[in-house]
Length: 367
Image (cartoon, rainbow, N blue to C red; front, side):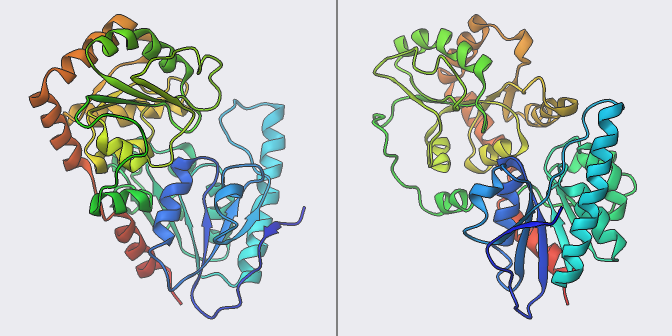
């Protein structure tokens, strides 16, 4: 199957870099933030059809798509099909790298990374891999020895990658977060100045179980004068079930940097990208890891933030509405505790992560 390509290929003589990042914001946003710091490189993108990159990338970079799937299921007949597709995708990427005369590959992990790393390795091209989660994914653990360097978001990730050359750079955040740090902008939401604010973030897909808990707790929070901005995602059938003057329910919100800066407390899943954004905006948090994440990697992320004093960690199956309600009220009535958590969050932030990662790429991938 030939590669599908969106937008034209460049004929520039500048160094050429193939970026393999696909699927979710956790993979795409760090990659986009990094390549924004590489103005002297000719960038092209490798992704998968019908994923988020088809919406975010084509207006900026040429997008090539291949058919490849994940490796989470157990061995069986389906594994043969996955393996066959992987071999085919490696050959496709190898052809792309040769014909495009790329100097190297940058990837943010996930299953798109496998054919990109193996194809580059077969051609002797350098690969820089960025791993944002504390517990590296399977592809990262298996293929990191084939990479010139593995940039990690958490220092503790290095223990899981004993055969890799690791460099701790943090995780790059979207440019809006960097702009918000330089100059805070007013929100276009009717929240009174000084009103205590909880922001609930379920990640790009939302979090129906967390949403339900929040709606059960909300009346007590309203009685205490608290406002709630609830980002429900687009898959919650009960998203419109609660109405109150102090409650704003939205599927998503564009100015995430601004709303996180304004929040007194955030209730969130524990994806690495979200945690990085919380650290940059110094937003105290209650973290509820997604229980079905691959290898429970969100719990590893959340534990690091909880141990640093930046957040409270609760497993979803142990968290009741009464417990969540009381913990939130305690925190919002304890400004000294929130202040300490915010300070701890700030210490976890690496604001220039994108520059550090771009510098690494420029050092290792050049003409």
